[in-house]
Length: 341
Image (cartoon, rainbow, N blue to C red; front, side, top):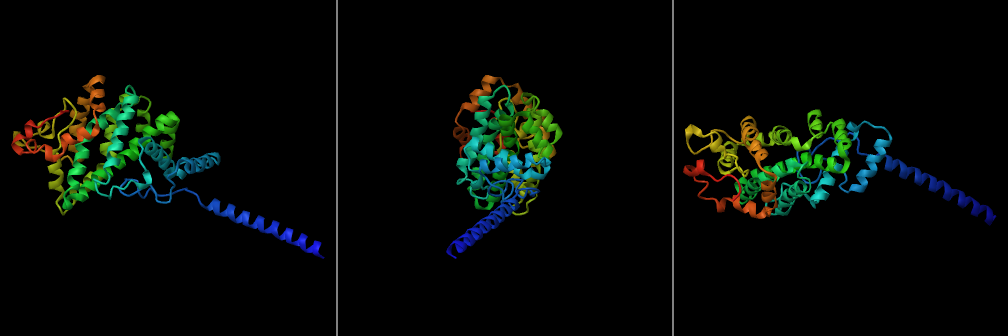
């Protein structure tokens, strides 16, 4: 009798194990990352492109491997694929993606702000003949970072500071992730981004020769990635975004040697103020595409190295408002310093 009961208990244990195992497999199968919307595709909130996505590389790699093995179209796992390359870029930059939050104050985000631009410098210095856009991004960054920090010191303007920080993150999520894909996965990884619908065919084609793609990548950044965020900044009612963004246009010299300031490029009635608002996407790209990018392209490799190797914190300090009071006076606008001090 005892032996029969023991055998019966063993059968029950086996059945229970099978049931629990089946439940576990079912649960695991339902935890997938297919067809997720890009709820944070513009980078304005904490973390990656969707709150349900993991931020550790191993988990993402395992899921991607499974989806690829099943022959699923990359568009089905678009969010996960994009998240993966953002995570890889964040790892390379030494940034914790899950804690990166542009809604925090600029001062509390200072380490992240600087780490991103130091990462761009590292990529350029490591690949100066290939990843030339990274040098351009790093050289233009001090005035942008100074704007985040300066606006963040004024309570009424902190929303604009957060928007600038969101733009920085959005650019990193787009162009930074693309660079990570190219470095770690080659053209095949870039093509998978295209197949998933993360980048367009023209951008994909530019990666065939990234050294010649500074203008292409800059156009993507300005006309696609952050154009909508600049539009929202300009259209804000209180404080008036038109005034704040015009003030940014006046205050922001172009840190590319040989490049003009906005006031020098298109002066208002021939005077010391610019005749356009930098937040206007058409006017902004006219300025950048016809003056700033060509000025960068004319720089020698030695000049770019010298600028990029200078500590980023020192370059940001050059563009903080407190250190540039004379430069910001309207009557000196046409004489504002361009380039690196």
